[in-house]
Length: 211
Figure 1 (cartoon, one colour):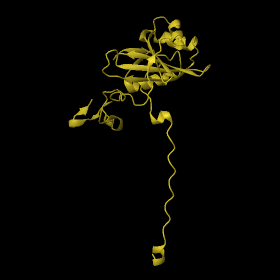
Figure 2 (spheres, one colour):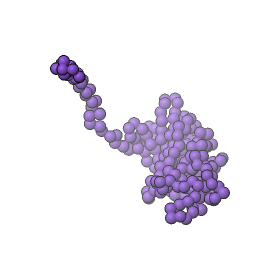
Figure 3 (cartoon, rainbow, N blue to C red):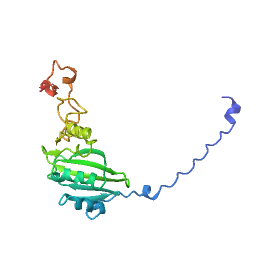
Figure 4 (tube, rainbow, N blue to C red):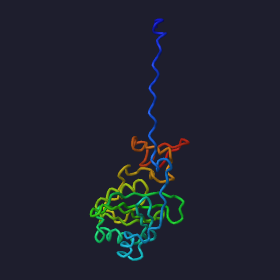
């Protein structure tokens, strides 16, 4: 660098524009608070369609979740499709609460009604080992969804036309989305070396082999 370049003053960096002010809900977020939805019109129409089916209903963030009795699940789903126009099953999944006294699992049904673009969530509480009636006769899209829940959680759907694993393979050891499934996963040696390990087996900690 020459002496002339050294003596030449450097231009100061341009000042940065001030950050845009945050919107009120960004400045101080307020989480949605769940409220009782027992008297909501969409809940009342389910109660009127199937007596004694609704256990409770909650509204949160503008969405309604209706907990129904397991023994009434099929009737409620049929009524939702045939009487209340929920013709599309968007999703079917499960949640593992593991130590919950009123049933380890929630099986969740996300329904859509095209006439007003309304969506409704149904939920049943399921004890460990209990059978859930398949809704494949109500919505054909439930077929692979129930297979996924069976595969990931081990929940059995009675009356399903082909209840097989869909993401893992037959003989896989365990159900990966259960809370008691090992976080580090399980060894899948049986899939790679079927002549060495039995179905679902593979090397485990301590040098022993899973069987």
